[in-house]
Length: 359
Image (cartoon, rainbow, N blue to C red; front, top):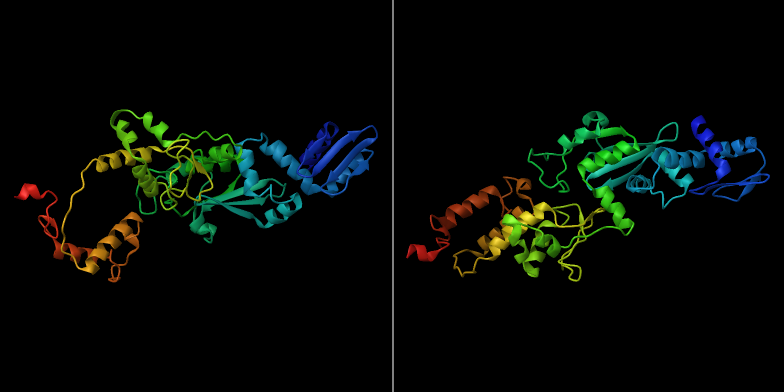
């Protein structure tokens, strides 16, 4: 507790204080005060000052949330969530903050600690860099810089979906205040803090798929043709933890839930995103094709290999498969061997896609 915090506390005392276990109410003879424990009466400002000096955590905590953060909005709620304010007493929180409290937000690792004057300081980096020394990471201060940091993944590929689990590593914001932290998080994962707060307050407005589909125009006007089975397959393909860190809260419509896992993300997805709508348009096009029967000549191992290749591509594991691991069906040399042995100018197993064109 510093002098400014103490002065603010003394100035606010006549009007009463009730916050996080700290209570001050004025009486004709002075004040009734308490700091989580039993109440006591103090007659003079000098004794009120002594009470504050005996309970510095409570005073600095009250000052931080009411005079530094202020406004019980999404930012306020998020910063309190970071230090588990609703789960721990003030004393427990200050003891934990002395060593630093860490929470995850998507792939972000957010550390909260105390500065000498009792204000919170926040450190931000990728979860995978949790054990990296600060000198190993590129340091940043300006929240605006993170917009460039997160454009590409670690392989240099553009990230069209901001909440995809492909956040690049190798950077850190070692010293942010609360406002700067929330601004930086918003650049990394836009609107996630606001929507998380709205959901907790019971105010999240959800746009279900059918309503979103009806709004589409132009080339996307066809997305409302997806059947519920096709929609569930699309959600299973796009809206799972391995593809997006949001937790899906929208369904087919208000009455019809999709029989697909929603994901475990901390922040909600309130409507189908533009990437999902783009994918849905392609899925509608694919669904218009009539099925055909084909006959292929494959060994049982080759059939299983094709299934392994599909799975590896779908789960994004292709780059993880070592060239020397020939036991892996999606191994590059195994795949090339299968192509050399089982395909020709007509396609897989010499079977053309449209046999009628080769009669």
